[in-house]
Length: 264
Image 1 (tube, helix red, strand yellow):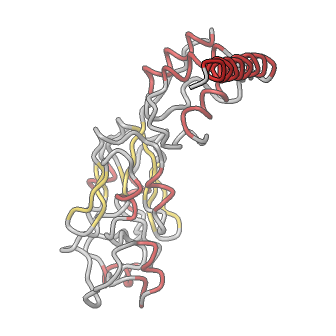
Image 2: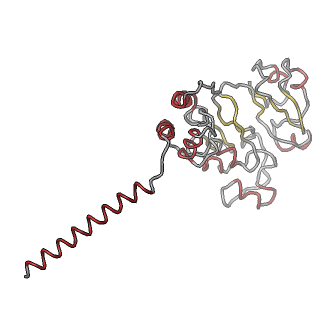
Image 3: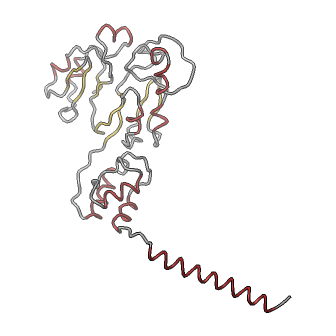
């Protein structure tokens, strides 16, 4: 074996490696993207769930928006007040008060309370039921279909189908809003964690139609509206709605509701 050839080959390989290293070092400095130190610090405080509940494409997107002043420090629904407070300190801003929220399903029509028109066998997905007769087997065209599109969408295992309707685990819910966006009947809303008074119905049917399909559905009688001392509950389109900012959770509406559809 020619020793000279070996030395030449070794020198060529070493020279090539040295050239590539120098080239990458120069290119790295020339094309380096400056990263805001605040953005890095904010990102480290975010929980990393990348749920999109803040309205941005993951935690990286939110961190960049906060660092640029395009999003509030408490924009992360998963981190809540503790994370919002730490980010506010990083940004040198006053700590904004954060009200914890949770998802709530506005339907109480479980298997015992809502009548079924037929036995359904097929794809178990709420969005797909729009293509089956009557939009599903339940006689109420406004209530929870119970096939769990919201369950599949929840990244925190905070919502489950119990006895035919979706039920939220308040302690596990992070208010990311994915179940809200997924429900094809718009039955889920984000409410204050401390709220105790809810109307567990979203029906827009008239009284006779409601009583024929569900044992507890709201019939729009307006007794709750007339008796609320805070004017926090109103009936529109045959269904009662609670204004959570006005509501004092006094329970008056629950006491006068003939259908016992108001929780309080």
